[in-house]
Image 1 (cartoon, rainbow, N blue to C red):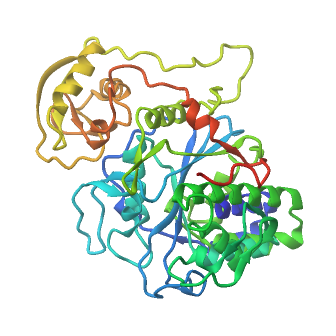
Image 2: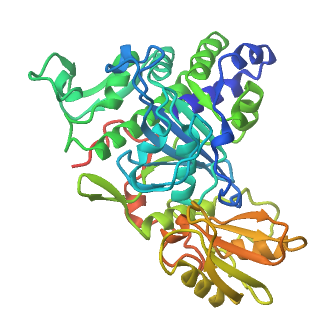
Length: 471
């Protein structure tokens, strides 16, 4: 998140066409051909940006991160940044790398596709294909299935780019609850090693900044959850530093160059011009309205499980552009007209026939979906098993002239996408995302963030020493 936000702030402040050509040459894009054909419908007014921190050791990153210089790429840090439709609020949701999820079919380097992988660690999605650059499209597919939200853009940042960025901004203020030694970063050491950080506030950059965000074992309970909290504090502090120091012409170019060189992005952000356009949605978001939370979680043995229905309530709130305190951030008010309704309007399926298919291996899913649709007034003409059972997300198929009816059906099925077909009628093919959603489609989605999630939020203007560790 730090790299993309800084780069966008820089480009907005610069507004200079002369930088475009130079910066265009810095930006690397990944192949979007690996994105799923069954994506959630694009129904949210806001935008969702997936930010992935890669721990690949190739291309000089081993010098900073240690380990094998030929090591494959893994997602060390991941969060989904929701930019609300009012363009004054943003919420970053961290997803622990050890979270057990269903990884949907993903494209391999040879052009083939994997099978659905249930009960798999989240960071394994980025490693599909075992390439040094990782698989951002697979991680995006996994996040879209997990959340039911459509990801508008995906950004990957590596060790080298991250370290360079922190040096260019002159360092970032952080806070340590206790002294930290080398073996806290590398628990395989037999001795404590040298002192890396002293207790309290300090400024870090380059290698020291990278060490800070990667420390896991030496603070609190040594969990990845604790490390996530410190990473959230770091990004908040970086944003605060950028805004407080100002962006003079002398500082613009080196900062923009460091930021864009650290990014691998989807084609939708693959030029300075595209970044500028997207940046306009961020320029009015202040520190207080930029907040960080972690997906509702619990331990499942040594792994992390997503807690339901709290997680679904969080995703529904983002889809409805509700902030964590329940405020409507769905757009600026105009005139004296009424404010948008705080909850989605009920779906009425009166007069619409639909056939429901189970596109997964979950027993009884078609019957469950049929019952939910019947409760909303749809006429279910039949249920059956789909021709394939590897559907990651739900899709509503419709024949010629039936798009409006299909859209009504999709509104009743959170995260459903639309797909025109040559046949007649409207068919629903239920995917794994529906199977993982208790009660999906039976009632309007909630629009309030669970209090447990809201109470753990960090604002970008919080003190760097507050709420740093879990345990």
